[in-house]
Length: 226
Image (cartoon, rainbow, N blue to C red; front, top):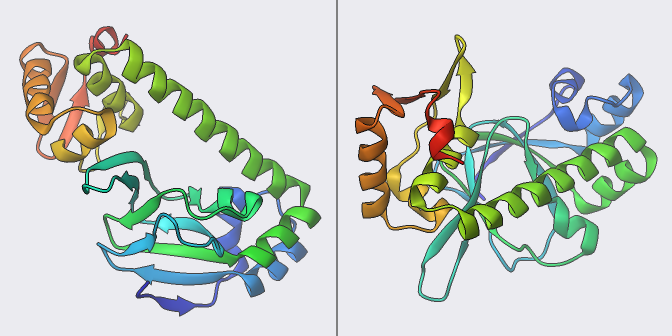
């Protein structure tokens, strides 16, 4: 990974949800273990099948978690943003990386080695609980995605994804981050052409409104996502 390493302050660590339960002394110890890296857009941070060596935490930017088959067909499992972490599963069960992680924007990341990560978990109950909650959240998300693929049509899957990716802006649900139709297709198991058709129908039906690069979600989209 092409990156520039830098030292990390305790103030930076305190703002990271994974470390928010740590005491000041624990943060000072962590600051000596953690490395900060600047990662250019398009960098493959993790590659599926590689041996697991570090945990990564996102300070800024976005990355996509993906899997590919032997023909190069790609499935996007999730989009990660600031405050989220990845690479922890292999550190816990000592298995190779199960998926690849690609930076889709310039990113600032923190990394902590496998040895230091396990040491932190053994000494810090709050951090161990935060990692466990993260794993449980991802398991629940995986269950919901499996259910969506089995029970919802493409309209419902697109609507559900838009709701999941939205954030509250002035009391309205808005997708503010760029979400290419090709990526939507790879996340819900459909073709790009089908996603384009569904997005057009949702717009024509008053479920969504395009505002520049943002997507405003109307209350009625809840019906489409059921």
